[in-house]
Image (cartoon, rainbow, N blue to C red; front, side, top):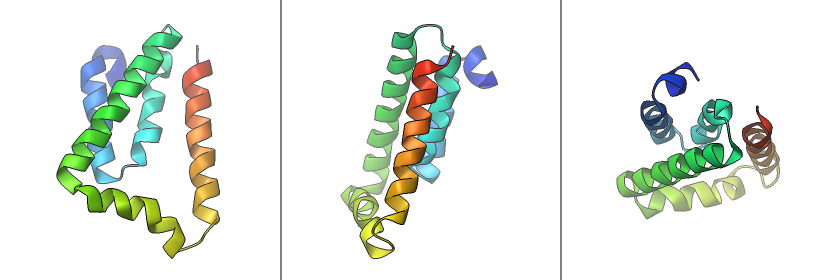
Length: 100
């Protein structure tokens, strides 16, 4: 959050880099935009950062990376990873929308 307060672009770049290590890290990184004043600023920053992370991950990892993400839950446990993923995404979204 401290980095985002000084430079929004550098903070977004750090979130994209974190997403390159593990794509779900982008959900945690989006919380850094919670301090932005208006809802539209928070949504714009989160959407652009998420989009950049997806595009860069796709360009570097290719379609097989995304296929692995989509079917990973079916290889391990059908429900445990889905519940945790949806819970984390919901918490991140709620914090982003309702942070003041």
